[in-house]
Image (cartoon, rainbow, N blue to C red):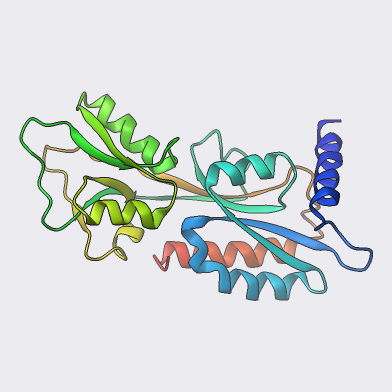
Length: 226
């Protein structure tokens, strides 16, 4: 009954938004975290080929929004970050190391709280960083908040403080540098990435699309091309 209710709500949302399924074309709705928008070309190419003649529709959002969307039946497949509970039932999942980044010339005043550049209501890597600081009993101060990745990057480049991110992402954020944790900042655990499908998705019918989506995102992310 819950699955059917979610589908009814999904159909209602599609009707209201004007982008529902037409009588002669089916749509496969895919969600990817905003940070991974660089994978869009490969996703559209491979998933579009596998889904033909159905259309592929992509939504870029933060992981929390994508997870809400997939649980509500508003999306068919998503690539998102989260903890073990949030990624429960994932078709595939894998870890990424999380590191601190800073401006090349930034240095923290001795005894001062750690200046933190973060997201307003804490994306997965930010939750990891805050939990690590609190577990280590290290004082911190939020000096800048923004959902937008480029805005947080600009704040770090301006020397406002430290920002957590994944190591593959950090390698593409020059001139920012990775802060090696030498007793000042705590070492950070991995964040989990996962591919999830809608609860009542016909996995057999969409197996080619699922396989194509998984091949693109796991291949590129594991190789650090994002």
